[in-house]
View 1 (cartoon, rainbow, N blue to C red):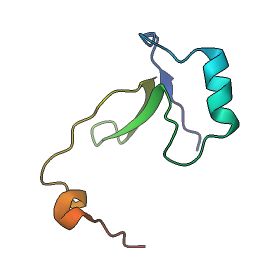
View 2 (tube, helix red, strand yellow):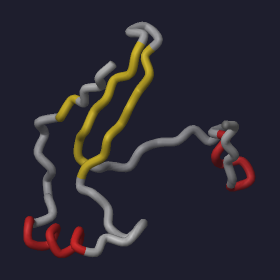
View 3 (cartoon, rainbow, N blue to C red):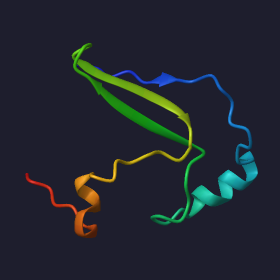
Length: 78
């Protein structure tokens, strides 16, 4: 099964210049350098699948009841 990602054609209002980006990715380090873009995936029970999208980075909302916020930790069950 292959997954496709929709690329939004809305241009980023202030993309990182190519020369600056080249310097940043030469030695990125974890959690220090962030992309201009982000990928989101949304499950749709009506479409029985996931909708994937790549667009410019932006803040996102999180429900206050999200388990990850409880006691500032989240566990995974493997």
